[in-house]
Length: 315
Image 1 (cartoon, rainbow, N blue to C red):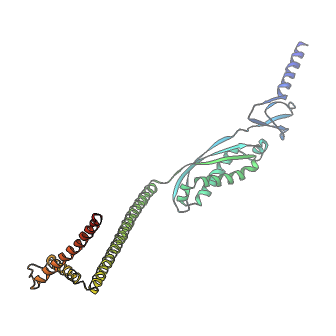
Image 2 (image 1 turned 180 degrees about the vertical axis):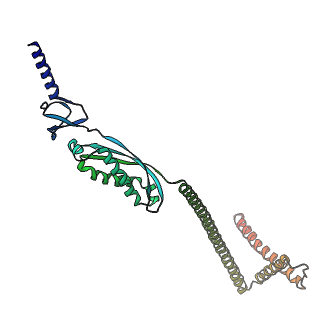
């Protein structure tokens, strides 16, 4: 009886152990009944029918990383490069990832490598090296769409390294150096051109200012000559009026003034070395004496005017 009881207790414990399933966080378990999928167990404590239901697969539902190994790719312009990358994916449906595809990780890896060759093989080397974001986006779209029936979400695909052959790297370095020298020469030529333009602009402005100065000086000279001509005309008019009134001294003054100016011009001439005094020098002296008489008469009139003004109070 004791043996029977012990056997029954052990049998109950075995049934309980077989019927109680604890699913850890981050995992889903598939349940199979007689080899057929029935349901998926979520994280936590779950009871199944012992010896009838059994755990089929334990599926990791966390995001995982696949390293894409290096492979050689021929680009559109026939350049050979080595490329490697990384793939991030997450299982969304445990049943599909288990029963729709065999060896899920291997399938995703091969699918990624194949599409890397397809996408990058359709691009030139320059596009390959400068458009990594575009390559990553195209790969993500293609691979995610292909793995959707497997219950998998591909979150990211990144190209880690693109390694061209050594001779191609040297050729690219020479090309980059030549391009930089070309840009430097262009900038230097542009600097010389700008300098010449600024210098020409400065000379132009200088010439304009100089012309403006000459114009202003000519205007001032013309104005001075005009005023001198006006004064000369006024003096001539006054002399003419004096002559009309019969004043002979005014004629002497006018002739003496012109005579002395002519002698001054002759004396200041750079080509004149010897000056001959004309026979009419006595006329010049007479004219000067006539000027003196005019001055005496003028001052004499003023003196008489003052004398008459002072004599009135005495009378």
